[in-house]
Each structure stands twice: as C-alpha cells, then as structure tokens.
Length: 262
Image (cartoon, rainbow, N blue to C red; front, side, top):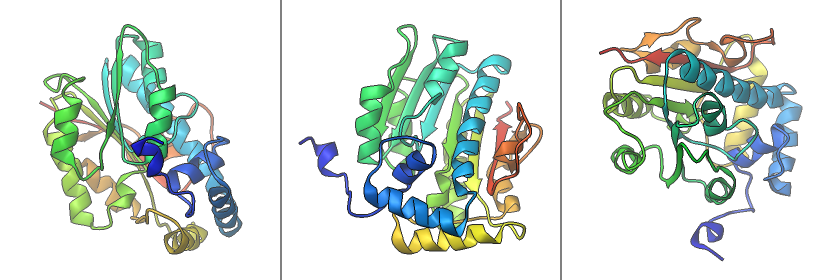
C-alpha cells in the first residue's frame, strides 16, 4: 500500500467522493453514496449543482483558452477526475497548454496521477497540497508554469472549506498577487440564498456527518473574491447562468471569472 492509499478513509463520507457520485462517477464508497442520498432527500436538486458546476468549468476554461489566449491553468481543489477535466478542455483548444492540479485528498491524487494525462505538446502535473499552503503551491507550480505569464487560477468549490472569511479572501488575494497581469480567477462557491432554504438544511446535515466541513456565503460575499479584478460578464451568478449554451435553472452554486489588469 502506498502512502497516498494509506491516507484514504472510507469510514466517513467525503465531499470529493459524494460530488463524484452525484455526477455519475464510480470513484466513491457506500458511505459516500448513503450520505449523498440523504442529502438529496433534504435537497432533491443538489445533484444538479455538481453537474452545473462541472459544466461551468468547461465553459470557463474553453472561453479563457479560445478568447483570452490562456495557455496555463492552476487548478486547486481538483476533485476526482471526470469527463472534460481542465487539461482536456484547454488542450483541445491549444495542445501546448500547461496545467497543474492541486489537491490534498489522497483518493483524488491516486486517480489523478493514473488518469489525468495530457497531450505530448503540453504539460500536466499534480501537487499534494492544501489550499492554505500558498507559498508551497506557488513554488511547486512554478516548476511547470511560467508565473511571469498569464495563468488561470481555478478555485471551484474549494474556498468553501475555509471557514474564516478574512482568511479565505486573503488566500485568494495572495494567489492572484503572485500571478502576472492578464491572469484570471475562476471561482465557484456554495451560497446561502433566501429563495433556496433547503440548501441550508443540506449543508447542516453535511457538516454534522461529513468531512471536510463547508461554509456557505451570500452571493455578495462570493463577489468579494473578485475585488480588484475586472469581473467578466455576466458577473457573479448561478454557475448555470454563466454564459450558458442552453438555459438551465439557477442553482445555489455561484461563480464568476475575473481578469487581473496590468
């Protein structure tokens, strides 16, 4: 058994594995499926959030690669591999694209190294690190990415695990401060919203039974992550409403894309 495999805990449900279950993946355990079903009973639409967030990832990466010419992506809080991962979407547009994935979940790392293989023209690397380890992430990412050139920082559904507001804003700010002008922030976050009260019950259930615990924020609080950046249209909205190819219902997962100016 490898060191990574020895760290996998199958006794408690885990966010990445439940997300994988909701999106139709197979990299999960009975405890994850049981918790996922219980959460879905509290909030029947929760599985659609996972799918909507995944589709947002694809649209945002494709937009940045095609329209903004981004050729470097730093994807922190990768989650378990699924269809159309960041490097697949980006390298479909530009095979020379370089992508660094960062996660601290052992199951994610084990699967990423086996499955997330990029094009010969590009580069794909994987870091075992926590979002809070900003300096370590940047130092290791610089071995694959040229941080003097624009990078897309992907933070999808990951700052929700930083409970303290100022700490979470500070982490995002430090990461963006280290990136070159022309870089972009792509961020999604579970929200609390008066029109979606059952989401709060689902989150409360999760925080009682699952790991790691997550924090909801209001849409206005999510928009604060983009302070100092040029927020691209349509702003911070339900991820299903960010430049959709087809109309879909709003979900309590809000997202946006912001550009760092020179």
